Image 1 (cartoon, rainbow, N blue to C red):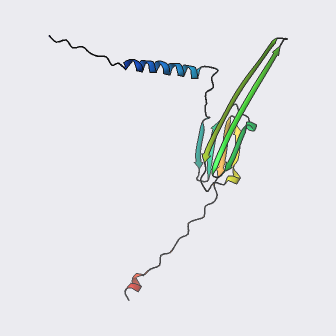
Image 2 (cartoon, one colour):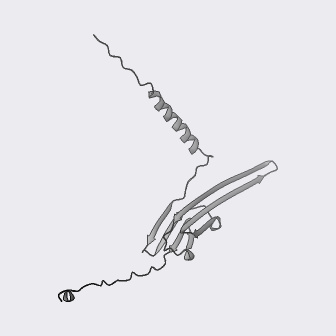
Image 3 (cartoon, rainbow, N blue to C red):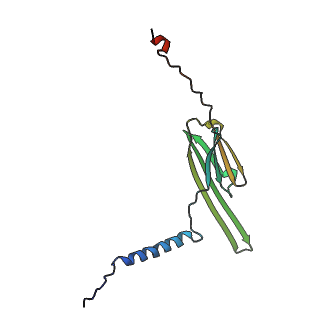
Length: 154
């Protein structure tokens, strides 16, 4: 009788080690007190083929913490928020809380965007930026010259 012996894969332990390392890094990066970069939710769409609209969900920011610029067919939206809270109680108790958040979004604009007429509105944590389009010239109809049926018979 022949006995079959199975050899185990010598690298099989590496997959469990990789899973363990992934768990460690994910726990570290998601634990409180660590910084994780998150971009605000943004919708970009066209309204009636007359303007481009960008809406950003940026609750917690103030209008003075936001910078919007349009140059060279690019719309840039930046925000930077710093918050410091100090508490002094009695002579020896002192606490400072600081938080910081920032974002940067860049949108390529079409060539017919009117960058001089960009408008922005900030309400209830939603920034709405409207970029109107310039009036495009109507296409010129070109007549075709050639022989007509009556002139071709001659």
